[in-house]
Image (cartoon, rainbow, N blue to C red; front, side, top):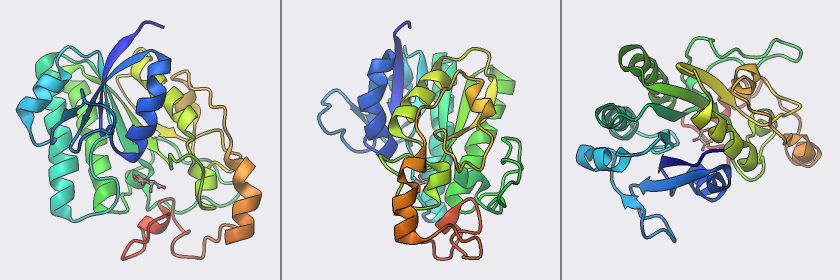
Length: 268
Ligand code: 15L
């Protein structure tokens, strides 16, 4: 495939660290950006998403942006507002001003985290289910999806909003057996989302081909995504340690898992 120049925001974060290792082999020449220095990458841009001039310079001349930056867990509304809501707006404005036509937005399952955990045999959760954010964090992902739709309708900037499940080297909870996205499948998915044609604004779920999936992966597959991994290889060990998923438990009753509990208890 043709090599592309891609701005990776959040390059020092959890998913960013995995992706900056894996995406170059998919033909992406990465320009790295983070609010903190990127280890081992002296050319990375250190900038805050509040710095509009820095964002203009960072996106200039790129083919696409993979936007992973922001706060990735629940926080105060003020911090989420600044980093995730205003920060994502600032990035889209920079893209518009510099003529960048494609963004892949790291949305999250927490945009629909208050959806009840689907009963066994129930139909998978569709991508057009109504937003049901479980946190201010999830609410900022709903905003990002709507911002992406608006920039497509108004300015013709295309976005794939990927509602990422749990992107870690291995699933660490029984909930993650449903929503795990292996790093290798994640890199393949972001590659497809960066390159697929005619996406307009598309919302897709991001997980591996998990036996215990709860959501509709068909729109993701329509981008050319053909996942290779299945969390089932970890199921016996996790269930032996933690028990079967129990939807009467407050931290397992909804898609968003422990993000629903107040105060939230984190999945790791
Ligand atoms: C997210 O959106 C978080 O950023 C990540 O840290 C995980 O907790 C993930 O969701 C999850 O739901 O497991």
